[in-house]
Length: 447
Ligand SMILES: Nc1nc2c(ncn2[C@@H]2O[C@H](COP(=O)(O)OP(=O)(O)O)[C@@H](O)[C@H]2O)c(=O)[nH]1
Ligand SMILES: [Mg+2]
Image 1 (cartoon, rainbow, N blue to C red):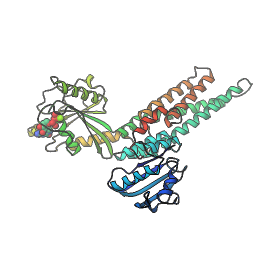
Image 2 (image 1 turned 90 degrees about the horizontal axis):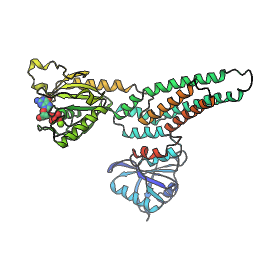
Image 3 (image 1 turned 135 degrees about the vertical axis):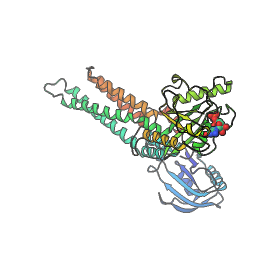
Image 4 (image 1 turned 60 degrees about the horizontal axis):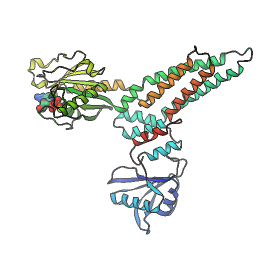
């Protein structure tokens, strides 16, 4: 195994730069660069020395001997002054020492996984924790990174093994007389209870995935309906171009918002227009496609909007809220009420991004929508499609095993084994080699 190093603290210049090293050369690095191996797991202030003995910087040195380290290997951490020159000099020195290579993104975490220090769900939780932008994302990721899913799935897997042992013990007794079937029966009853637990956990997957990815809200409406203006108003900063020219927003623009601790992704789209030029038509196609996959469509229409709302079939089953824009342009007497024009809209709002009227109502409703979809703090929920798919397979195997119509107990026991294997795939104990690159690519360098 090569020894890897990386700047783990992000961009320089900064107050402090943290350089992390993991692998068998750590001890040698300490001996050559600070002339000693300090006390484990304690910060010591040392001179970090160059090849000619001169001081590169004075900083904190931490020594984490394996296997009780994050990666399971020997690890060293240098906390130095966060300047470009200090970091560059340290990198050069580490290259000179020899046997060290720069780490790939997520390589420290990958080594932690391979050493069995963490399981795959904890690695995913760490990736999510590093990417977290809102309180709900942080809480969910921290719960997962702390091993909540590992413990849950590990416990279920052990329970399945026990159930199988009891069921299979019966095979040997089957030939003998007067053995009551109750042990196996009780085991099957427990398998049924376990199935129920997994089904109700699986039902929370939608919630977990939404907290992780954020509520997806797509703005749709004809050109000049006020979509980009609304996006800007929501984002409280200029992220999309607002012009009076129709069809300027040709691409999709995404903004991540934090609405009272919940993540909401708002997507601005090209206006829907039948006679649009080709570039714009491509934008429109993408807009509708994005709307179909979203949690919520905001259908915007200006007072003078002649256009039709999209047909129900075009946007699929996505929930639609209708938003009457440019409220300030309406005469006072009409401004109070917004009548619904789009048949399947579940809510109607009226607002003006110029005066700000009505904006609070929409934001309040969005916040309500996302928090009610998000569940409670401390919930242990599947957070990825990967979990959801594998859990569905666990349930399918259990259903097969629990099907009393099948007489061969050996086959039913085999189904139980397969159910356990699917759980093992979630935690990464079984067959995940081809998945690792995908998962660890999400990380930044130095984690
Ligand atoms: N008076 C008024 N004008 C608005 C309002 N919202 C947007 N506009 C104007 O309407 C035009 C089109 O807005 P824009 O956000 O680019 O629409 P989009 O094509 O749907 O993205 C621009 O000139 C905006 O300044 C509003 O609430 N009141
Ligand atoms: Mg626009």
